[in-house]
Amino acid sequence: MQRARQRISAVIIAFNEEKNLAECLESVKWADEIVVIDSFSTDKTVEIAKGFTDKVFRKKWEGFAKQREFSLEMASNEWIISLDADERVTEELRDSIDKILSAPTEANGFKVARRNYFLGKWITGANWYPDRQLRVFRKEKARMTNVLVHEGFEVDGNTEIISGDIIHYSYRTLEEAYRKINHYSTLAAEQRAGEKVNAFDLILHPIAAFLTDYFSRKAYKDGLHGLLVAIMNSMTNLMTYTKIWEIRNVKAKDNKK
Image (cartoon, rainbow, N blue to C red; front, top):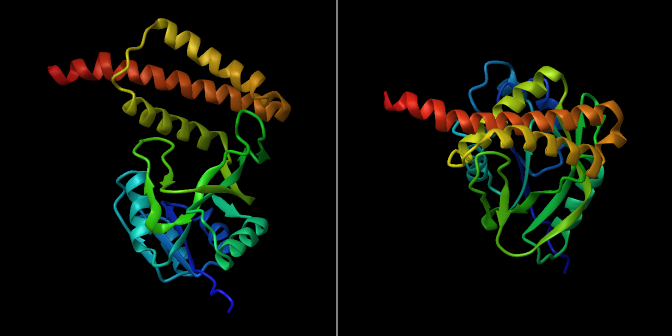
């Protein structure tokens, strides 16, 4: 007797993603269910989402982890594929997922490679590829990692690597890149607020980050795009340390007044 295919829900969190969302949802139309969690967007995000699914929910923004946890609560199927609005599922990944759903597996989760794009170019250096992340998993076996930045899912039991990529249009413009750098460095600083920072940290860590990305992790192979990626990773490092210093030496004193 042929085994019945298991069902999967695609879950997406979004805020003001009218430029990205349609392509994202188009890439997961094959899923048995699509769930969109919107953080009270002011553009056409909700309208676009309702063109693909009736499972559109609005939830006040409480951080990435809380939004993703809520997306799992709203999903009704055993298997989950979790995406951001600026991501797309390739045909190869779709076919690999279909095989998983159609045959027995002992794995509770699958790690997927991401093709990260910077200003229109796929970046392979600076550890930007394969950048494998746990994105396909059994709902009942999954939970969020307890971090403020670069949070993700983890599962109980075995995980495997799956064929096919998620395409990630992470930075379409420099303005968007600077905005994200500012945001992520703030989250990282808040998570590391107990650390002490001195002048050597502010000088040496950003330089080391650049040299590591550009030479050791071969960002130079991506040309000028790779150089910019290495510079911006160094900037993120510098901003994180300066914000840690600010929390300990400026904001802490202001709170005592």
